[in-house]
Image 1 (tube, rainbow, N blue to C red):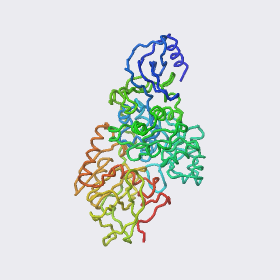
Image 2 (cartoon, rainbow, N blue to C red):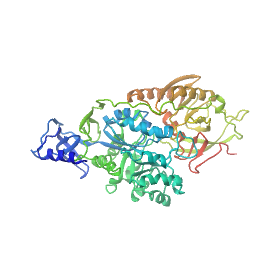
Image 3 (cartoon, rainbow, N blue to C red):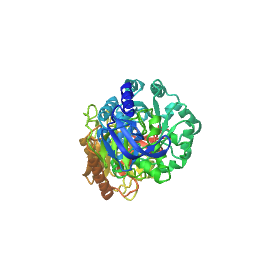
Image 4 (tube, rainbow, N blue to C red):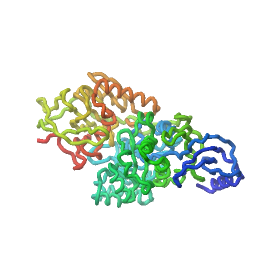
Length: 580
């Protein structure tokens, strides 16, 4: 806000200037009083100037909205744009028509690959998009010391960029063991936010009791990893904002909804975390979780308030989050508060989308410092060989419906060199993570149950959080082919079977994203899913690509695999495959 804008808005309300636009005959969602009232909304220079109710205020243009609801633009309180497979500009074109006008994004995926160059790219790519994109500077690059990422970002690196007006604070603090043991590097990162009064996002699955007190005493503001209504209640009690998350892999709106009350609703936000094109096109973006909550009993006005005012308040975005004089005119019209399908979306008072379509595509940014990130030292089938000394081994068990795994054991067959012998009748496959950033030649190997593949291999350069190459397959030869094809693409996804490439999707931006539009990416992913179901997998309870992406994430329980080997999250240490 500045005095020139103040003068303009005052002049409109006193009848000395005309507003640019009047949205007549609307039902306005009042997120302050938690009610709906009828009125006319006037907009001037991108800001709400008046709620009408008199004959003094006039406008250059009037639109009769026929009694539609006028809803403040939704704010996704925590997301990773990279998980959409889309560049920030294409992501904007995808989510704005669905009512999202602001996102708080954590770019730790691309920063794990490209460091500060990744952050610079994300800022530049979103700069001229209609979507307001704010970032939280990644706090854990790499996520742990038990893997190799493309960069290491310390407090001095954060200091170089955290003062940018589009960086609101420190991203999700996944390294809670480091916090608990007063790791100096963690404390130094927290200090970068403390000095500026900026937010710190949380990530504390399963943290309770004195550990939760220790975590929240660090003034960590939010958490999107609650598992139960009791978790929600305890975090709100300690002053945190809790996010109801509804993404593609992780969905906890229904699980947490019983913990939401009118009394604590002002501390509840909505987020997507990781949302893929199929979800966005078929269910919506952050609106998906909001609609689900409403359908299961949450008052629509309270739900909308959580997705607008609460998020704006949490992240100190004082210029948005409601339909009120002096705030940005970010809003949309809809016929139904249950369906929440926008017929028209306005950002800063400008019509930017109608009936699910963006009106003007956002410009793309040059790929400076984020292209060609596939530095693999060695590629031959021998790198996938296990040299086991026991038939009794630890196994990663995939649990459907999320990204949590379980450690199990199995008795396997080995060849003369100790390598695992695959049996199509046994649900057990080899999984490998290849370091792709520094050419170290590291290959972490493990065995996985629940993927459902009979023959073939799937490889991807999207492997949270360090985004090395992860590949699962029935043989060393199939795994090698899948990785070779992936390297040729410069990153993305590949599917092979019987020595042939069945399908692929290129991710030319850091091996994580593409500048191709939403519909193209969605169609290619649909094609790959169809191939997976018909040709390689008989487990329809999991997403073969999204699930694989998270098998290298060493901050989500119980066991995962990194480029250094099998990792036990509970013990926070590497462990051998052999049990005996």
